[in-house]
Image 1 (cartoon, chains in turn purple, brown):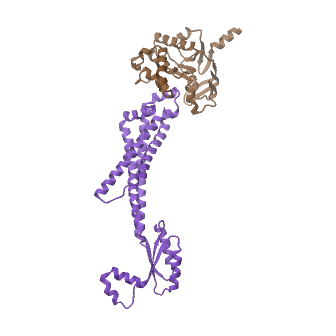
Image 2: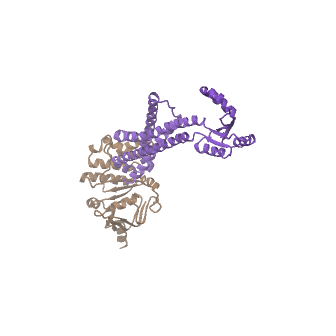
Length: 285
Length: 230
């Protein structure tokens, strides 16, 4: 077994509590980020589903001339964000209302004049359904003098996006705090190990071991802590997903690339924390 | 082999440790470095290992210069030096053979080459029969022999010894010095810091350099040149 691996494993045996703390701290940091990932992923999926239904409805004044309406249709269809435009005439609007509201059918039949306005139903292309993009198109349509009102569900669209932003912010703050704790625990573990092995390190330097060789067991230890922490975080996230799915509501599991990324992030974090700590503490031996 | 030229060394807290030291040690020499505590003996050994750099002047060791030394070159220099200390500096949880093997392992020696070389070194220092003993099971003299075997493990060009007999009784000290003589007779350059004047006086055949307050105050090589001129 190579020296670095042997010593890294020995460090786990010598200070099991610190090693376990390092792994747990990394796991919790990544678990919080994993939970955010799960939330963000499912919110994104929900938004995608809702966004497919995002539609702008522009109600037209009764005195709009056919020429004005035709020209407006051509101009709106030409907008890059617009996927399609359907012109609903007053007659079609009334027919739809009568079909959808059976209980008012007689009321509609007894009317002398059709009270419902004609409208444009505008659907948007994927990628142009964010609140900002929808608002831009809505304002453009609103600018026509014969357009009386434009509706597009601005409030709930904004709410969903706000929830996503808050979830991201909270996850970053809590995940960052756990990451800081993990870095401190790893640095402490390295410091204790360096101190416990200071004689050995002194002899290694005395006989001509390179800095890389002296550092290698510590880096390997950090890498292994990070790897275990990443795997544990992925397992905790999966457990949460299972519990949520069976007790509260159905959520979708994360794509496998995200899981691999979590484990890689843990490994890289463990390695980097060890590198910073070992360089600092070895200078003092 | 070793050249110190107009070397000064100052420490921020303890002040001047060496002033204007010029010392040349040739290949194959055995040199006693003597003087009272604080005279600068250990400082010279540290400068030769480049554990410290001189405040002024230059230290050259086997082609390495203190003026051109980069941190990443230090391991290469250290592999050309074997170092022995008064307090042995052995790893207490490892056997004699593991202590010697450690020096080879950390410098990347192939595993297959380690065992035969460790056996040869322990035989050379007369401790083949104690290969499996830990330092606590060995006498002071035996521990120092293990330390010498470790110092020789990477086949250095120079052996530096900092008070190697300081912790030993008279007989053990004599035995360890006999080992140094034997190693030197095979061509190894040895620089031995010691304040054991009995040992130094018993071996007038070797060069003596005496330090006082950070300066060289006597060099038997220069004295014999002077005597020859006189």
